[in-house]
Image (cartoon, one colour):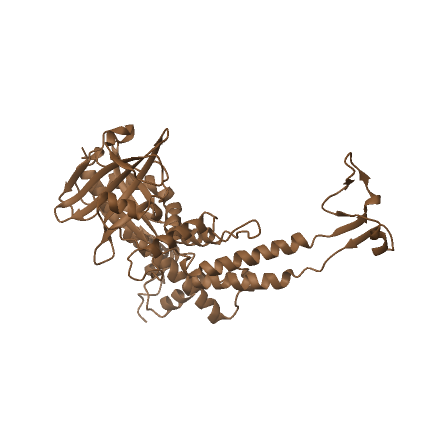
Length: 470
């Protein structure tokens, strides 16, 4: 039964149908303001290198993807999740390991667009997870903690000249989680059109129109919200992009980058010559031996303008240093606004050098990554809980308890040398146990660390006169 409730979103769907169409179809208010919808569309365009200000003259530095990718990489690199407790824990570990390799990429999408929904479902004798980006779902309601309690997912297919859209509505209630499936038929992918039976689409034919999963009061999906205050719509619980506060700065940086490209393009060395210096094609046009270098001057006046001969070399003076300085300043400002350390996007050889400035820069990046890791962990805990519920409903694994331990590699945000030096002094003062020093600085478990210490002490030479009376 439960395999007939949900279906994963198999095709990328663009939210062009609009919140108003969903509102009319379900008779529900969509909890996305117009300003948030516009901002989300802009963030998505920026991430896919399709910013509205780009043109044949304005090229992209692809900074949005660089910012989102760097945060996701630092937050998830070598992340480990370990399950313990029972056979159910072993089953969940196996299911989770299937999604772990793709988690970093999905978190990058979540950082770029402000949020990400992870929706588990039964797939055969296991559990799979569908990752739904922020521009592919409609939140309907939130609880007091800002968690989404009801949501609409959309799946769209094309058959001939018809477009079919399925709306999958989830609502958490005290009686359980209610799930509804509605299908619509239209001649345009931008409109829902008329409601139709699910059976008109072969992939949806076996889905139940409505079902309630009793015994649970929490949503059967998880929402990762990028941990940045919403300055677009402060009243909205929705997350904002990791570069939401740097939109104008990124636009300026693209302009400066384009100026730099044009500086080299327009400043290429050229050799101007009278047309009589070249041969001619069948149409009487001069044949240039190397078009990037030679320029033809038409008319006899060219000799008058250049009495020294047929050729005149033009080598302009470049002003790239001024443009580069402006671009570096813009990149440093983007790093600051996005919570990244100086040198992440800008030239690391030109970052601030004082100890205070370096420490402040590292602390800013550390806070960004640590907050992101906390948000990831919170979302994954909810995801694992939902996976456990589906495992029980589908009788996929024996009943049992489980415990989850998360480990995030913090080597990118913690100064390991400084920590090692400080911990060494602390051990010397007698304020830190030796085993704790090994755990913190060598990544050992407490058991292994104590074993190291015991073996080291056993190898020390014994004092033959230690027990001899004077």
